[in-house]
Length: 493
Image (cartoon, rainbow, N blue to C red; front, side, top):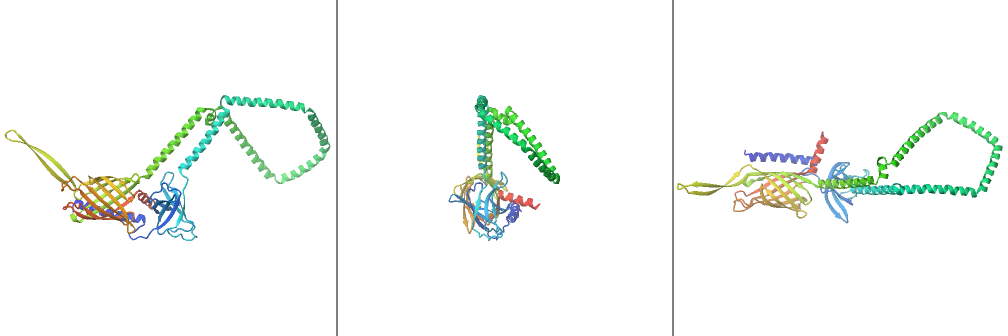
């Protein structure tokens, strides 16, 4: 068996194992049940992309199948597993996986005793406060604090504060002088008040024995009550004593703090008395705010990256050989991706070399001849390194290296029998010495589910010696599938 055949057999077995593994982790089968689809409406679906996870109680039960805008609201199609049962009162919300984790849709299935909710129903959506809302509130609080500190600085600090305190002392002196004049002008009223107090004291002297007797009776009654509740009273007194000690300690601490603030000690003291400290604090807060915005933008760009990995193989009956591919597509935006693949080519790499031979003749003259050789290196590992752009929603173009040769390609996706299909045309290796014709490759794919596809087409139709139909298939998965697989592996330990 040749090395190419061994590689093809090994990758075919790997494809079968990977296919079984993908079907297992997605709980799908080639004839699996139809997923249920519900709709959820949100005021904002920021951070939610196609195929984002849908979870119930943290358990993944489906994915976002479509996102569209209707009447200024985001409308999401949620494809759920057939076993999931929703009830009247079910709702959906956008949730973060941790502080900086990916966003997903959390579904509340509703009361279990409520009526079942039919597929296609609309779920009410809720969006949690974003970090922009939190930063806005923090900025408003910072502005209020800045206004308070500025008011304190204007009222107490500097020469103007000393002038205000002097003014308060002068007002107190004027007030005492006014009171003195007021008392002198109302001396008669003061004398009358004194006479009334004398009469009250005489009355109190006459009534004091009666009052004393009543107080004694009351004391006797209180003594009896105290004797009956001595233990409770003792506990209350202990509590009062403890409370008074704590109040005394708190008063001492408060007195110490206010003294330090008045002297300009500590952060608050400097904040109240030192304008430079206030300016430095404002500068620091602005720097922290800028840093938070920069971190938010950076994390947002990283979260937008998506990695689609693929392993595929194809048989070429016309030349009795096969070709295998293994690599990934890195999507940096929704419209641009980079493709890197290793290719096991059945024809190897064609090398063109030119040799210059110089011959010295007997008469001393020289003769120069040029000899061109074409060599094929069999079982050569080639590479695809391409950049792709999405022209329209389902149309993409690619350019770069195709089997280590320059070329271009175009892909068109469409729906066929309620499944996704794709047609691709590639043209590369324009400089080969085969009637100056490029290597053309026409391929069609039909996706059985999100991860498995079959392929068929025609390879190199312009070169009769290598022209052949192609039949094959492959497995594709993205970074969300990898995280889901790792989660299953951790749970199985």
